Image (cartoon, rainbow, N blue to C red; front, side, top):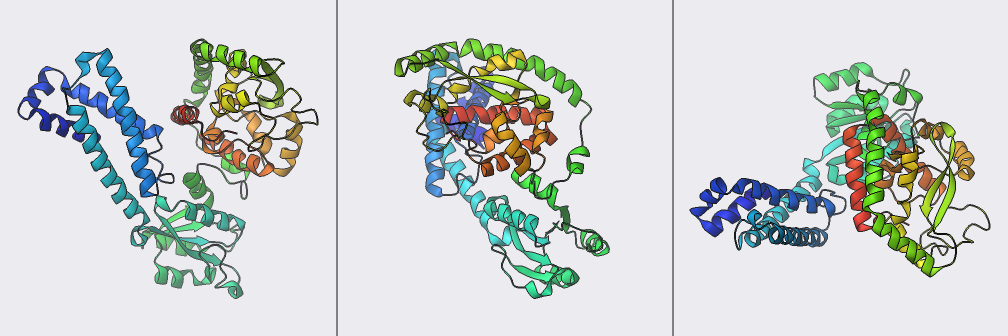
Length: 442
C-alpha cells in the first residue's frame, strides 16, 4: 500500500510523464527506496504493535511522527544524492496519501480485530493456575483476535464461578453439550494431570468433524506471549523441541559475527564512549568503568565491564536490585542508562568470549542462589552464553524484583528453545529501537 501511494503521488504530479520517469530514470527503484524508509520509520515508532496503538489519538500521533522522520531522511538523501529525487512535490503528495490510506487501514484492522463476532472463540479445558494464566494473557491481547468463552473444570459445584473474566461453564463430562451450545473455534487443553480425564475420542471428533482447532496449552501460551510458562514446564518441552540441522553450524558462525560486530561497535561508538567517560569524570570523583562479577555459561564466573552509572558508595550495604527512580544513580548515569550507553564496554567481554551479542543477561552470583530456589528451571539459562541483549531485554523492563526475574526467565527459556538466525535479527532490530527511544530502561 505504501508503494502504491508512492506510485499514485508520482502520477498525480506528472500525469503522462510519470511512466517515462519510471522507465527512463529507474523511478521504480526510487519508489522502492521511499517505501523502505517509510516502513522502517513505522517500525521504529511501534506501528506494528497493536497493543501500543489501540487508541486512535496514539495511532494518529505515531503515524505523523513516523512520516515526519521519513520526510527528514528523504530530504537529507535528496540533498546528498540529487539523482534519487522523484521530482518536486512528489514526496509531499505521497506522504499525505500514505497518512490517509494507512490510517484508514489501521482503523479498519483495529475494528475487525476487536469485533466480538469476528474473534476466534476459545474454550479452555481446565480451571487451575495454568488455565487461568492462559485466560489472563489472552484477555490482555484481545488485538490478536481471541475471545475466551469459559473453562471446563472437574467439580460440578464450581460451575458459574468466575475465575477471571470468563467463568467455569461446565465440567469435562459436559464437553459435547458445551461445544454444541458455545461453538468454540479452538479448544486449549490446560489440564495438569490428563491421565483418564481427557476425552480423546471426542477431541478427535471435534477436530475432524467440526474442524475445531485442538491445541496444547504450553504451545498456545508460547505462541501467544513469546515466552514459556514455568507454571507447567517440564523438561520434555525443551528436550524434545525441534532443532534444525544447521543450528550447530550457526552457533559456530555466531562467534565470528560476535567478534566482527563487537569490534565494529567499539570503533563506531568510540566518540560517544569518550564523551561519556568525560561526563562521568566531571560529575563525580571515582573510576569511569565499573566491573562486577556475573555468572556466565556453565556457571563460570567472569567480570562484566560497564560505565559507572551510580555513586561510588551505591552498594556499601550489599547488592540490591535497581529500582524505578533509583536514588543511587547519578545524573549522567540516568542518561546513559536510558540510552543503554552504560553497556558499551561489554563489547570487550564479547571479544574476550565471556558473552555473546544475544542471549540471557548474566545475573550476579549474590542473586543466583535465591533465584535457583524460587524459579523453576532457572539454571537452564546457563546452558547458553549470556548476551549483551536478549529476547527478555526487548520484551520486558529492567529486572528489579524476584517477580521481574521470574517473568524475564520465561522469555529467556523461549529464546533458548527457539534460538534461530531470524529470532536473533529480530532481537537486534528491537534492541536498536529500544536504544533509540530509551524504552524499558531503569
